[in-house]
Length: 114
Image 1 (cartoon, rainbow, N blue to C red):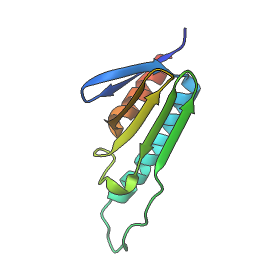
Image 2 (spheres, one colour):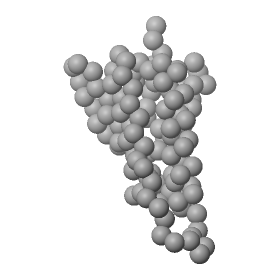
Image 3 (cartoon, helix red, strand yellow):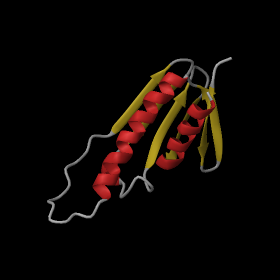
């Protein structure tokens, strides 16, 4: 049986096949993004205007195609940030936003269970 990741959305959830190795890579990407957002939200004591950061784009292709995108330049903190996720296979496509902390918690819980 393939491991299933559940991503909780604001209204409902989506569950799909996702290997632990891919989840670990996504977790690292999310941790890097959250660190960038924490630095960007720190008080700007004597700093010039913040330097624009590159958007986070994660892609996984397996039983399904998963893309996670977040532009750190538009969010004030990691707690306010939203990630755009696209999940598709040959029969269905879902595109929605999910809170960055929620997505991170879902990945973390999944990795603890597998």
